[in-house]
Image (cartoon, rainbow, N blue to C red; front, top):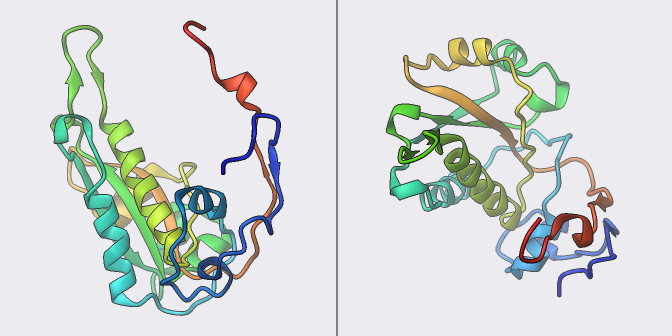
Length: 199
């Protein structure tokens, strides 16, 4: 069951699934448990990520829906070992480079669906966000930690990742086994977010 409209703070211990606590993977979560279990991990162990777990995370991104199924994205997998200086250039936080891997979701705006009949809005950013969210939730299910990062240096990211013209870095996340614990989640109540029939 999801929390009620008035329950905006959740205890970090509310989801005690062994997949999250033991970091072993393989214990199924309900979707409600999964979205509560996900949190922004800001401390990582250096343990390597098994190839099969990485493959499952990337496959979740591949299967994510995109506007008109254009899939105008690319995912760059960066191994942090030996590239500490490069990783720091992208986002200068100690925990960002602690994880063994960093993932970047890039977009190719020219390939994205555009709402051409009215305002010309390009949906590449939306597509990339959905792809990232799929990978983040898959990582959580597998006992891996992530943290959305948008406050990176885009110029440094382009240089470090050697992105060609027409490709833009949009979102990053470290990917690794968490070395911290979940914190209480504080969210606005549904009454502030949901509008019935009209705003």
